[in-house]
Image 1 (spheres, rainbow, N blue to C red):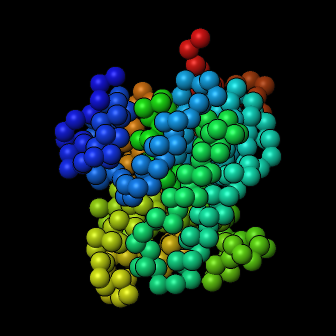
Image 2 (spheres, rainbow, N blue to C red):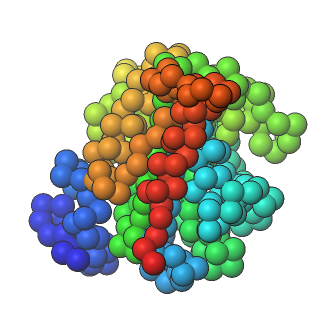
Length: 336
C-alpha cells in the first residue's frame, strides 16, 4: 500500500513521523486534515499504535470500529457486527449476536475514563489540559482486550471519545467503520431525556448528582473551528493548552467567551438541545471527512419513514431495521 507523505505527515519527526508514514493513503478521505491536526495527544496515539501493531486480531482481516454517538442504535449495530467475532460495546461483550457478559478489561478503562472526567468536573475544568493520565489505563485495557479476550471491535463510550487515535492506529491493520447516526435534534432530545440519571454508585457521581458517563463528555469549546471533534478529550485538551496556557487558573468564561452556555461541567446533559445537536452534526461531518467512503458504512436505524412495510411485516421500523442489519452484515463480510 502506498504510504503518506507531505502534506499529511508534515511537521512531524522521529517516531511520530514513522507512525504517520505507515498509515496507507487508502485510510484517509480526500478532505482529511493533516495528521498534526488530528492527533491531540501524540503520546496517547503512539501508545495505542504500539499495542495495535502487536495484536493478532484473532485471525480476522480487519478491526471494526463504531464511532456513532450513544443513542444512535449502537447496541444493535454492535450486536450485528459481532457475527463471528468479539465486539465490545461500552463495557459489554458481544459474540455471534449474543450478549456474553461484561468485560473486566473494558470495565477497567471505563472506570479510569470516568474517574478522569469526574476529577476535572469537580475542579476548575481549565486544568484539564493533559490527557496523559489516560495513556496507561487505556493501553493496558486495550492490550488485554486484543490479546486475552480476542476483541476485534469497539463501539460506544468511552471508545468513541478516542476514535481518531484508534482509527489511525488500527487502519494499517485493516479497519471497517460502522457509523450509526440519526436526526441531530432527535438525538439531542433523546440523549438528554434518557441519559440524565446516574447509577447509585457514589464513586461515579459528579457534583451535580449524576454520573458523568450517562450523557457523555462534550468539549466546552465545541463550537470553536480548531476543535475538530467536539467529543474528543484529546482535541479538547490540546485546544485548552494552546488557548489557555499560563492562565489556566482563570475562568473559562473570562478567557474564552465562546464557551458553550452553561457547560462548565463537560457533560452533554448540561448543554441546551440546539447546541448539543450542532455538536453532533459537527462530529458526524468530521467522521465523514476523515474516513474514506469505501471504509465507512453509515446506517440510520431511525429512518423507517423512508419506506413502506411489506405485507405481513410488523412495522416500517422493523422492516427498515432488517434492511440496515443486512447492509452491516454485507459490509463486514470477509474474503475467503
